Amino acid sequence: MKSLEEWFDEYGESHQHPTNQKIHKVAVPGIFFSVAGFLWLLPSFSVAGFQVAPYFLVLAFVLGFYARLSIKALIAMASFSAFCTLALIQLDAANISIINLSLVLFVALWILQFVGHHIEGKKPSFLKDVQFLLIGPAWVFHFYVPLTPHQQD
Image (cartoon, rainbow, N blue to C red; front, top):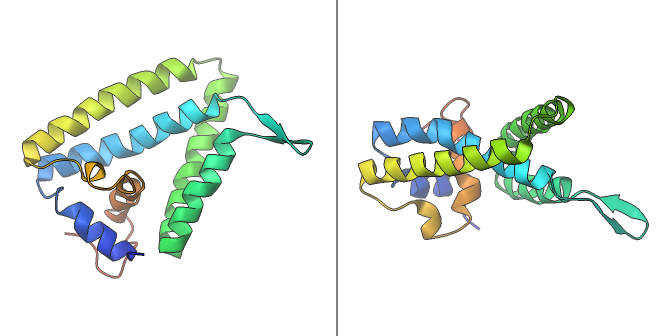
């Protein structure tokens, strides 16, 4: 398994242009939130008499992925996931359509991502390896809080 620093180095190869980086700093967390919104809406199911919410099942898997990479990545992504969860609870309580919000964010931000990659002149990393869909959010937070020994420029 690659180290977090190796993932970041490889991801960073197609994210060098300052405009593409700025787009990613907005779009990647927004896409993460929109996917959380879609998962939030999935109905719970019963397993051996226990109710299981797909949202928390997927979140556990995602956080497990980060835990294998580094404790700092786990803390950063668990914190952002907690923020997303609290925001979804508030949106639900306010009767705001999470499906509509998530759909608009998802489509608009993916379009913006592809604009960034057009500017960059390189394909998105996830086309090479789907795991980059989980590396992207940690890479964005790495700009604000170093998650590896070498802060990205």
